[in-house]
Length: 340
Image 1 (cartoon, rainbow, N blue to C red):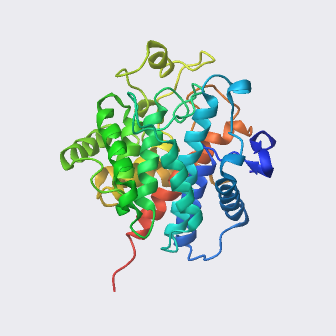
Image 2 (image 1 turned 120 degrees about the horizontal axis):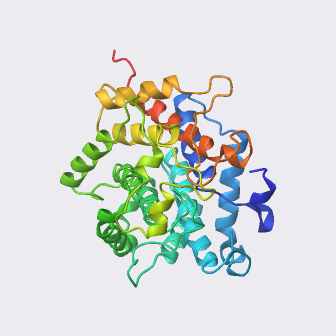
């Protein structure tokens, strides 16, 4: 939030998929686990920033534009921001049970950016900087799953609002249509979204996907983002090659990491597996054993370039990993409350 590179117009900042969104989701969960009613300073700054950009509407500039960042970046920025804003505000409002006017405005802006024609109808233009797993050629599916999660998270039964049913149908059709060609990572995010928006995946598909995710667990009890992000289906040759070799020609490592392990153990628990399930228990144990005890974070490496782990940009993956590890552990803790 205080990073100069993230600064944008009207004294706002870019709300990123890699850091700000996971932080928003995890901080709310951690606040609940700690029975802390007051948002932290950084949490308030983030919510205020998102709210300000929603209220600015068309007066706000895109995060990136065609002139300085390349073709389609204006539309991609608009689509990406609209989804993330809606999810962050819906998640925040879920703590109170009341959907605010600002969150409703964010959803209106999100639906306005949804594609209604073409092969990708039902999805959103999504940032593509060839940066996996969030900003690459296959990331529009990830973004659509986030949109579904936003709708399912919103309080006051927003999902049943008559005015959004046609848009929701487009979204469901898109997610169903593209399912077979998606990476396990994208499909795991879809499974997570389906725990918030019932009916997003069929019971048969849900069961099959849970089995596939469980089977991808590593020998040490964790999951590997590099492994989960790899798929040849629907990928260009370049995209598939990038799942093996980073842009700097270093090999992508298949070891377990905090991001994948946190995301998977969170998702499996919310999909109905208990913390006593063997695979979930092993994943939670991996998280307990692999936290950096001196600084408190969980490790994860970039899929794109080898980066110094202590640099600002080098911490992006570990920041995201830490957020999802927190979500997984707080979910486990939520279901371990002794019964009296």
